Amino acid sequence: MKIIRFIQKHLLFISIIAFGIGLRLFFAFSFNHLFDYFNILVLAKSTADTNSLLEGFFVLKNAIQHESQLFGKIYYQVIAVWLYFLDAIKIIDLSFIFDTKPYNPEAPYMSGFSHWGPLHYQATAIKLIQFLYEGIFLFFFLSTLRLIKKHSYNSLLIGALFWALNPFMIYATYVPFQSDLAMTTFLLGGVYFALKILINKEKRLTSKNLILMSICFAIGAIIKQVPILFIVPFLIIIAPTFLSFLLNAGIFALAYFVISQPFSADSVLMKTFFLTSDESTALFNFTLNNASIVIIAYCLAVLLIFLFRNKIRENPFNIIRISIILLSIVYISEDLSFLYAQFNIWIMPFLIIMAFLDPIYAVFLLVPILGFYRWIIIDNGSMTGSMWLTYGAPLDKIPSFESLLNNVLQPKLIHRFINSLFILGHSLIIFYSIKYWSQTKKFLR
Image (cartoon, rainbow, N blue to C red; front, side, top):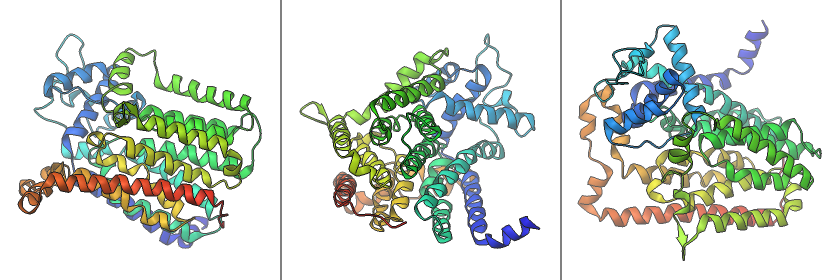
């Protein structure tokens, strides 16, 4: 009876969530970016078979002459556990994904890769592991909105609509099967726990929320390194004493060390193709007289946060604005040739959360949307070619954006114009955030 009353009371909210789930199932079935997805699947299968990325890495290198950019090992291990589960319930046969036999160290491994892959229903089922991160993301996202609008049911409905209908977050998660949602989830989790600390005015050396914040940032940083940029400024704001700063920085370092598994057999591979790869270090490519712009901007941001930490603490929600500033610094500094479409989803939940405090941030959502389409102009196949297996080869013949531009304008000029707008947009976000912060305007809860 209680369950029925709960459903009746929250029917609209449940309907929105159900629609979002259905939309994700549609994307998972309908779109397949085989290059990215199968690369990740090969590495996850290698982890499941050998608890190492080495075998899968060299399968990819030999088959497609490509040294794959890696994510943190934990991302592949979670997929490997899901593969074990699907194998146990007979949805897939793990031994025969890209192979003709169970793993044997004395025989060629995944010899079927580049010749065939899992059946379509199996490929769809494997993607559903992303619902693990969707659930955690929804918890942190809606919980953060509850901290801002404590008794507003409408805010939860708007947040649920943002989650359910956001095609950019859905596409990046279920088509190329990328790890950006997973990283964004734990980044948001760290910000959520930081917000709770400031709202509750916790003054202890450490606390449950501080530890959970450090762990969330550590997991996110292991998947993709962006959350590393958050731990120092956040501890400057939150830690009541220098001893507390050192203690909680140590907790983050310990969590990062343990979860990153530096003792594993593939640790050297991870250092080379995760921590120090061209993609990972592209953030430092934007230079002024051989000085990295991101290092200058980040150090300046940390210095300003240190100098104005007491003023920042007056309003707990300043922590969200600082998150947006840090992410915008990343977007401005990142080498645009490595700034892939899916990276633009990192900032989206923070902008919509901030929009509940200042509606102008909803307008700023246009900037990551522009960033998403900036890349699609280059990589038309990621939009039309990804439907090739489900809705027919003719879709692959749709003219690309670039080919259309070739007929009317100079595509390089258009591309530079869009890049300029993208960087200008993030510059405006930083400018407005600092201007609003300096006014010390109190937000209404």
